[in-house]
Length: 212
Image (cartoon, rainbow, N blue to C red; front, side, top):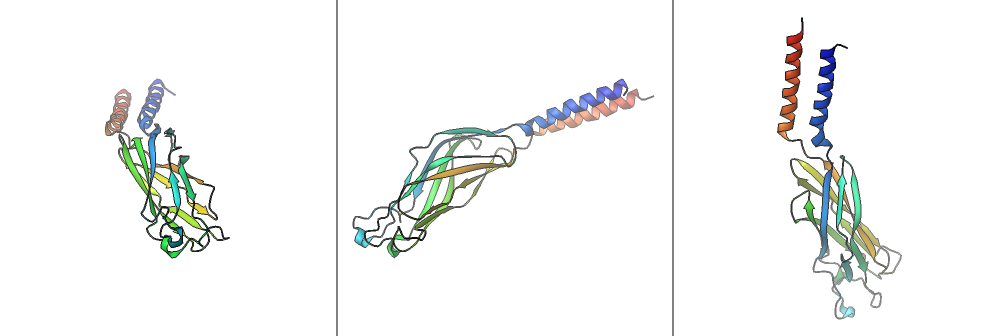
């Protein structure tokens, strides 16, 4: 390999590495807080004989702030979001028709990265109870969530998915987890790509000038 070709090869390798660097950078995620916001159909009625509310307890007091990096598309991280506890008693033959209305749940995650400072992202869920005793063999209560896509930066995209929970009896509480998956990284800055193209053009011009 002559010296010109060798220099060209080394220069191209260096420039490719430089151009690819922004795409190889990991995306940093920082979640500072979580919260459940249950709809009006949840609660403990003052008289269980005429129960019109479903007694499910939502708690995020044990959440620990999360900071992590995802370095490739498809990479994910799962962490504890909070807890959910079915407390509906069997004393009056609950769960009845009066306790199956307005059972949506909102899960809120507060991000400082990568979507901006103190940006709150909402994930929507729905609770579906089974009419009858809470402790019978059937599933007493199901909480399902809709996966949510979040855009960030220059065409970056990630998904939030909360775990679906199934309760066959009252207690103990179940841990709700959240999974963050990187769907698309940020696009490299246009200036970097333009610089890469100009450098390749310059190398080609140099080779032509040196050719006999």
